[in-house]
Length: 165
Image (cartoon, rainbow, N blue to C red; front, side, top):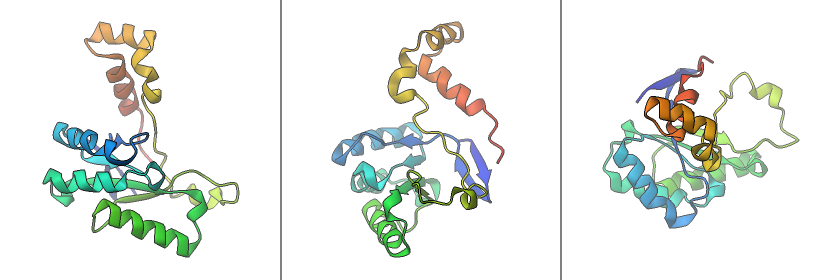
């Protein structure tokens, strides 16, 4: 899978998000995604599915070096002690020896974003507009011209955007 490189780290350009898949509902979806070739899995402590994703990753038999796992900490857990506890909890639930990318899930009003902007490459989330892109008539017409679905057109457009940090 194609990657982008930022700060010396190669990140798969397309990842599988697990928002709104709480608990064990995430496991079969992630297992299917891994079987289809996804190697970047995105979760968050707030999604309440890290344990299910950890089980799916363990059951997949895919070597850890071939996976890229992102998870996120909620903005109320940014004090050093709380951040470390959140990281350790996520690591344990995911059954991993390391997390490839650990993000602040949502900015807080008391965060100093100016110090972070030099380091936080922007990540697109919900590139399919939480399912609305698949029903968009303009994307559907473009897809018809190219033998693709509206969702495929939306993802192709996103991947075609400049990714140089």
